[in-house]
Amino acid sequence: EVQLLESGGRSVQPGGSLRLSCAASGFTFSNYAMSWVRQAPGRGLEWVSSLGGSGGPTYYANSVRGRFTISRDNSKNILYLQMNSLRADDTAVYFCYGESGYAPNYFDYWGQGTLVTVSS
Amino acid sequence: NFMLTQPHSVSESPGKTVTIPCTRSSGSIDSNYVRWYQQRPGSSPATVIYEDNQRSSGVPDRFSGSIDSSSNSASLTISGLKTEDEADYYCQSYDNNNNWVFGGGTRLTVL
Image (cartoon, rainbow over all chains, first blue to last red; front, top):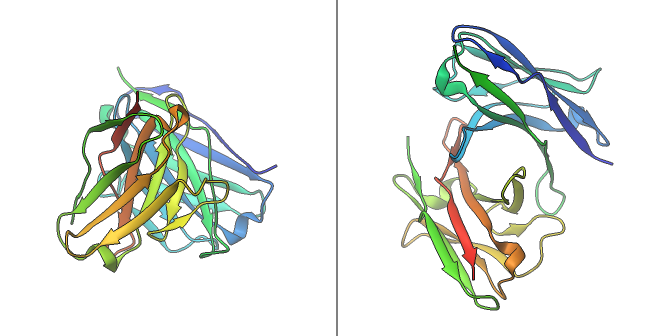
């Protein structure tokens, strides 16, 4: 069974740091480009960051560039998001997402999300 | 960068057909692939359409995606509406730097 399981979300003060993890199982993780997408309470989806199957290249939304770092460990099948200098507007559910291939051999998966709350 | 604009909400009756537009503000809609995601309340998103018009695995053929260069927009059409189709729908594309751009989302009500 394919699974993406996020963890690491919690409440943190402004200016603090968190590292989110996304554990993958049931598919060949290294073949998949991975991304983080977030959703603030009651709001729409917002892309955060993406990286390729081998760990590069990396891409970041303007809102997080310079504060967040995406990475992966293909030996452990884990995707990470290191979040520094957190702000109140980073409060959101963070989803991990994986995709591979092109039509008709295209596969993609979403995790269930982990909640990050930035508040004093 | 460009924006993708969707109506905030649409509603239609069961069995009918609804089309949700997604208009690109600048640049050509056909210059980068468009995807559509369905998000039911309290759930993660799920991809329904990728590469403009390809249905994801398991998505019924009542769902279809299209691109219209004349209006610079993408559309998601759902025919034979069912109450289970009630959800938020998001379009998404890419800029030339491989950054994702999401539409604001459309709440579909089936009543």
